[in-house]
Length: 319
Image (tube, rainbow, N blue to C red; front, top):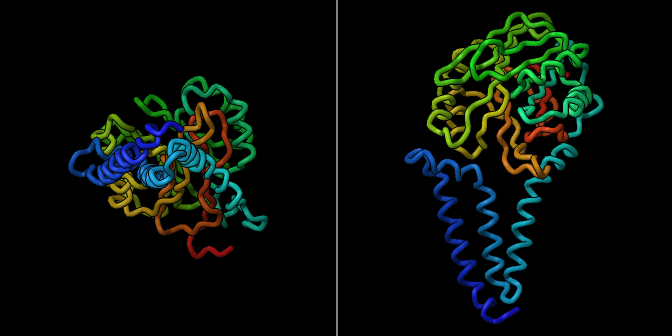
């Protein structure tokens, strides 16, 4: 490599390292200036980039190759981590009989308005065989898909005549009731309640705004947290939060609701490359539940999000 290019290594890597430190710190300052919270979503990416730049700056003649390879490994490392989760948390053979009150498998999936691969969605739903499915971004074009899976999910709660609501909740067991509750500002919540084997269970299916609408998103998180805290009995809130666990948005809901978060693996974006970088799809639940099978992403199903799933049972219910 040319000596002049080699001599650039300390300066370029040093400047990059300083920039990473500034961006990493900026992610903690969102409470003072909200747009800075965007950097919190990339906290681990920035930290690893800083480390790569440190190493590259010490390697002399091959610093550029080291930097490029390091950044590639960061991207692919995050992107392939859901595959690790899928293998680490393969459901055990003796997870217990579901649908009879012992445990409940819940799946959430932002099906994406651009996703026309209904066969992939149906195959994923049938393979996962969850008891309850929370779908987001289900518009008129996907209504035929709901009929195709009615043999598996005869009970379907759909947002109707509610502006901005694209959620659908599917269930093997009948609902005691369901409703769309519109929180301010502009956050429709599809709320279902169960009787019978799942007596008292409540599940909220949500899809919040995302950057650049950060002020509205924070207001949505606050309203949703207040709504969740007012509910009585076992509660699961699931869906697309458009917020990573490191963000002020996430913490606003977690701290305000008092619910326990699950599912920290990357789920978005998986289009055009199936290498998700950010964990923005989550489950939150009350202390009424124990985790039987860890929350994790599932395989690609045509969307720009990966589906996520978790299996739970009532606390103290036994195996």
